[in-house]
Length: 522
Image (cartoon, rainbow, N blue to C red):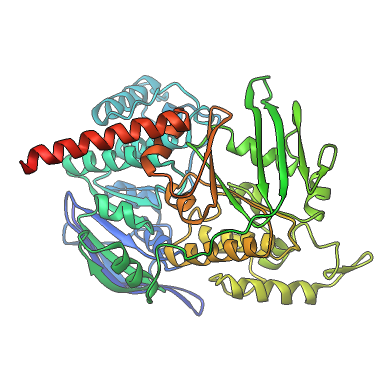
């Protein structure tokens, strides 16, 4: 199916989110829409899907004009959408989630779950999704939940599939699986509109690229364009994809973790005798496939998970027995991996979220009296510094894009008088321009002498900003290496291979490749 947009404009009051956007997605084509967070990508997708009515402009399917009064109309017309934040009910099974709202019925008017289950099995088998129709959503990893969303769209005969920032919450391995799925869908004739800000993925899978900036189309490109060219087009200026930094000048160990063991609610060991340290004036990156204990490590540092054994010390003082509030007040800046659940309160204003756990402390309060004007001024200053795209600091934070919510969390945590900075996936959902700024800001914090622990599933990020990299596998630190370690070695370590053996295997693999090259040249 061919999807065409002609001069689509969407305004919210005086704010123009989309300004005369035109593009065409040909049948069986992967068309990437590339842009910064807040550029208007998600608004445009929601307009196509019938969640917003365009202020002006026209949409056509197979050259016929269409207009939708809601998502049901879009689905009926053959458009499916996988949202950045999945629309799934945790306690439902895969079958129930796929059937919800479009339940097949038997002759007696009862829901035909057998038919729904068969449909899930057929689509899963056709595309190799490997999804059990009887598993509940909450039992599935994030990558599998995304496959359920795609099955849901295909079960409703979607011929145009919108993927809105589909890799924002995926590990590198899950991203590779998604790219493979997209190619299969394309071969089957599905048209895909792929919304993202990740240049490597665009180049890997797109047939053509449209770039939007501040709600307007600013150009188009082929996937043969360099990442630097795409980044510059997206941001509107030259962008460095590598962060320049001076060698670290580390001091004494400021954060010391010794023999730390954490158990899950059912008694399973999720963090197994972890010992590591972060020195003053150093960035230690923790790498690994998601789910290997990184979450438990950061939560134990914050105090929301209790240690079964071991100790955590900050500047020589044990944090054992200290509450979360006490740890934050002592100078811990903490960026959680899930901003929407753990980082912000959706109904609160941007200002209220900026002072979320500091509202009762100077300069935001004097005794029991809060100082709203001081809070607002500080929020305004820091959101301007972090380039948060917003109306005013009085707006509810839920009105911001996911990336801009992340910037508010970062602005809040980095505005403290930091003794330790811990960030889990600090640039998840951010565009290249924002990533450049965040990395530079973290390095500036390091250069002040602050110990920084950064958890990231993005190998490029770990290699870009870290002074040392600790790799976790099944709750253990399998090795700590330098920032010049190859991606091959890190990848092997993330699969559980100890560092020395990983280096040997990688070297042998490289030798084999060199011999092959010599044979070809000969």
